[in-house]
Length: 230
Image 1 (cartoon, rainbow, N blue to C red):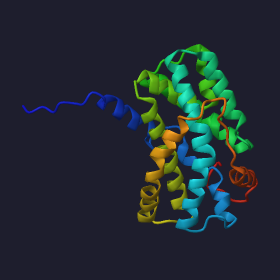
Image 2 (spheres, rainbow, N blue to C red; image 1 turned 60 degrees about the vertical axis):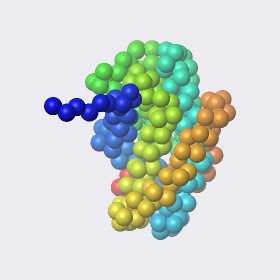
Image 3 (tube, rainbow, N blue to C red; image 1 turned 135 degrees about the vertical axis):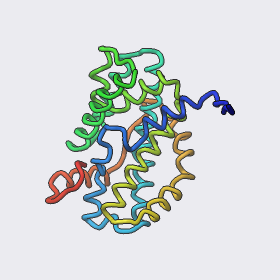
Image 4 (cartoon, rainbow, N blue to C red; image 1 turned 120 degrees about the vertical axis):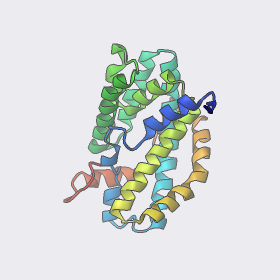
């Protein structure tokens, strides 16, 4: 019988696909991160303005805060440095500027913390609360234990963020599926650079400056009708 020889990192690649899958039961589909109000306010009303919104969030939050914190958490997880993971989770929560963004951080973190032990990921008692506070911690633990590289984990994280955002935009603007795919394709060239840029920022320099996101999210909290939790 013919056999196919697997590459050395094929198992890690499939594990990464599992972590970033939209079917992962952490509720990512329920959040728009301010986009719903931005559309209501007329800030985002087309494929062009949506791409601009995504580019802004990418530079002002993903590259400057989330990816550097994920990189730091990954290194701490490899070294079983539980105090460092606690610090990272607290900082991630502190950088969430509105109630609903803090709730999102905690809800997604708690969902991932419940799931990962069922997938064979060790969740020591010392890190359980940290993981429940921020999904960054759970992703770092899974990445380290499944031997996914930090760079690939970052690529997976940024793609998952983008795909979820485009799915939300498709429902809200609305955009057709082809337009959504065109936005994904349009963003791809900047994603790898974003992953590389994030490696130049350590956890003590990491931070977010996204006033539009904060304004949109705070207004979304009192928006009359909503499809999304954030």
